[in-house]
Length: 268
Ligand code: MLT
Image: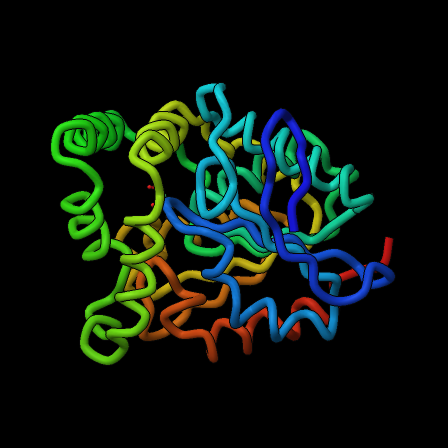
């Protein structure tokens, strides 16, 4: 399905009944809404499940404006308005989590609960910012393929490479099908993002934090930090998973997600 908001056509799936409480999935960089298939199928019994492609990812066009976390937040709020979703639970991985935390801070009345997966509240360190610039230059010079190979090694656990070649292939395909200009715009947006750690003590909504035990990009320590800073959070470490915990160990991920949803996926 598609809808035009903020000057771009957003592609999304809308599963389950509109009478159910809404659960919106936000994918990570540089992936797309298909990464949530296993969760969307499992959750549609409990919620109205909406999974969309962020600007410049999957089937959604990039538009003219430079990407930024505030622009991604505007897209989310505009999509909710277009789909007549007054309040929702967000399930967001990594860059999706950067968007979800900012959205919940700015519009607390629109969100019932958060599921923060393999994400962090800190901004990029100076070294991290430098690495983003190098990645941007490398994409501009050498294209997407070498970037994809390098990123895959950071996104997935060794166990996934050994035991789940189909997951590796699916993630590679998502990365290489993302246009180079979207990669560059998203890397700039993440590089420029503000921290959200200082707002955590004020986020009183229920939060479930999930993180792969071998996450190299937003390591478990970053989740432990958020767990300690948030007033109402649960933390579950997903075994046998790296940064893409929902894809690498969907059974364990869903086993944590579903009980949380049955308690917190409220009706509007
Ligand atoms: C993501 O998975 O969304 C990104 O790798 C996060 C990041 O690079 O900070």
